[in-house]
Figure 1: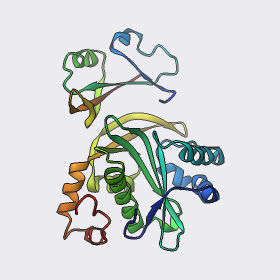
Figure 2: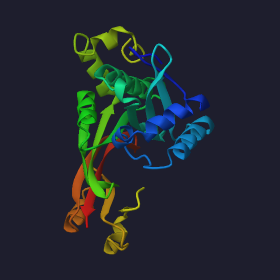
Figure 3: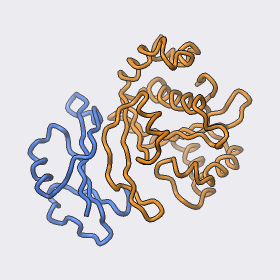
Figure 4: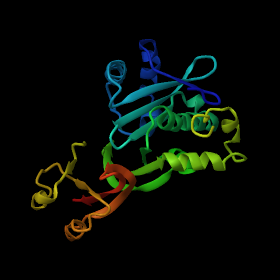
Amino acid sequence: MKGLFLNLRKPELKDMPTLVSWFRDPEFTENVFEIPENDCEGYVFSLLNQNAKDTTRSLTLIAENSRREPIGLILYQNLDWKNRNIEMNNAIGNFKNRHALYGADLYLLGLTYAFATLNMHKVFGYTHDANVSAKKLNQFAAKTCGVLSQHILRKGVYLDVVVFSILKRDFVSFLESQDAGIIRKFIRSGMFVELIP
Amino acid sequence: MMDFCAWIEDEELENLFKQESDTKLYTTVFSYEETLKPLLIFFGFCKEVCLEEHVYFEGAYQDLEIWGLLR
């Protein structure tokens, strides 16, 4: 699946060093919900192994740029085929690439893949209350469902967790309303053609 | 799901914070389930999240609520 700047593909074993370097970066791990604070290599290996064997419960995708450099990651967890909902996490790998356009492209690609390819009814996600940029990005298209107060323990402190979600029909309405809006370049790239022909 | 949280069922409410490590309890209820909510309120639970159209049940998507109680 192609976005404006990024393409999605399945991760391969050759991506392991890149992924491990991302997961070793405290700025990356601080902003991704619920990943282990140590044993990066073990975590990445289990992620790739699981992704190769069985994608019925979780799925990991790499986003790469036109030079085929890995830029970010989409982690789908808790795929629920009966209720057709899915938890989505997305993050840009290197700090130098964390500018708005890659971030927006990754987020929109993640939602589009979930709705158009996986045929989900709903995408939801969690973010730490302190993660202002993730909250801003999520509030752009999705709704805030509430705050789980003091829900996770990080570095000895209980943190609040914000829950976001978006329904397929609301995402389609959002895209239709954006024809002349801030994401018009993304729309004109044709990346949403399966949702808004 | 997490070591410091515990899922509870309504019949187990008398066992709140049975585990030393429990610092928070949370449970999920359907939004339409009005009989259970007064019981949750009685025990001090607060509604934290409403997950819109989260569960497909009886031919329709139903809203689900997450209620939490801190120690």
